[in-house]
Image (cartoon, rainbow, N blue to C red; front, side, top):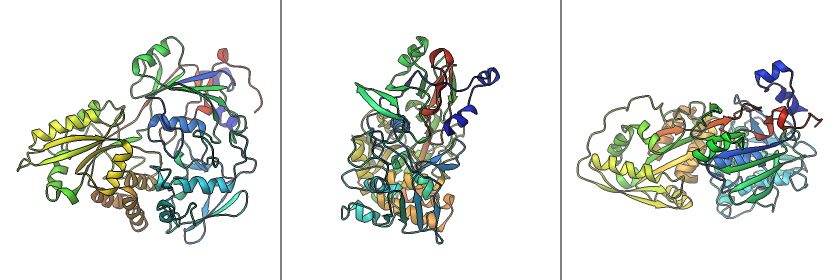
Length: 481
C-alpha cells in the first residue's frame, strides 16, 4: 500500500490527466554500462553493480530522492542515546529474505561484521569502522563486532568508539545491505530475487515478500550493452531503460547525479619535495579533455556529496594555472587498475602530459584489489583512481573516500577529523593527507521509453526498479498488493 501511494505521485503528466493508476505486470529490460560482475553487496564497486544491488538488496535505512532518510528494514530511524555513541535499532516484524528465512538482528550483526572481515576483503569497511571493535574484526581476532549487541530477534544496540551522527546515513549505503548468513551472492531482501544468470545477463523475478510491497514489474533483466546495442534495443522495442554514459537517441533522457570521482594521488612520503610540484602540474591539466578521454558520462560537480577540496570543480572552469615544466627530469611510476574500469587510456594520456612537463612516468597496471592494497600500504608514487560512491552525505562520503584512497588508517584519521571539525575543514585535511588531486566527476544518463513511469533517481545515482511500471498495453490490470 505504501508503494502504491508513493507511485501515484510519480505517474507521468499524461497518465495523471487520464486518471491511469500504476499498473502491474510485464517485464523490464535494463541496459547497463557493463554486466555486473559482483552480486555480493560487500564487494560491489561499479555503477552497474550498484544498480544490481538496488534490485536485489534492502538496507536498514534508505535515502530518498531528495536526500532525506527514511526507515528501510528498520521500524523507525535510529536515534542516538545521549552522548551520540550508542544507537538502538529495531527491525520491522515479519521481514523475510528471498529464500523465506526471517531477517533477524543476528543477520544485521553478521552483515556489518563481514564488511571488516579479512576473508571478505570488502572495499566498504568504512561503514562499520566507527563501531567499537572494528579493528579486532579487521585483524581477524574476533568474528563479530563487539560493539554490536543482539538483544532479541529484532533489536540491536550498537556502540561506537566516538560520536558519529551520520551513522544512519552510512547504514543507507547499499554495501550495508542485510544478507542471510551463509547465503549465496545476490541473496537478500530487496524487491527482486535472482532467477538465473545466463552468460552476462541477470534475470530477476519480483519478490512477493518485499517489505514495501511487490514490485510493479513481474521480471527484470539486467545486462551490459554498449552504446550501439542499446540504441538498437530501443529502436526494436527490446529495452525499457538504459543507464549509460550517453543518452540514447529517440528516448526520454535525464542526467543522473554524478557518482564517480577520479583522483590522482601523489605520495609525498616517497616523492618528497617533488610531490608539491607534481600536484601543481596535475591540478593545471585540462580536466574536460581528460574526462572525454576516459569516456565518462555527464561531468558535473558532486556538490551534494563531497565538500571541497575533494570535490572536482565543474569542467567549464578553467585550470587553476597553466602548469610549467618540472626541472631535473624526474622518473616515477604511475599506478592504475587493470580491466575496463581501470583508466588505462587515461593513464597513458597522463604519461604524455607529464612528459611534456619534464616528468618521465612509466604506467603500471595491477588488479583492482592489488591497487587498493598498495594504496593502503603507501607502496606507490602516483596513482590514478576512480571511486564510485555508494554513500550519500558529506560525512560518510569523506570516510568512503579516505578508506578507498588511503586504506583503514586514513579512514580512521578522517573519522577523528570529522569529530573535531566541520566537513569542509576535515576534507581539506584528508586531501592533504592523501595527496589527492580531484580530476573530474562523472555519472550516467537514464534513457527510458515513453511508456515507462515511476522513474526516480536516488542520491547514489541508482534507480529503484521496483517502482517502475509500464503502460497499460504491456501490463495486467491493477491488483491489490
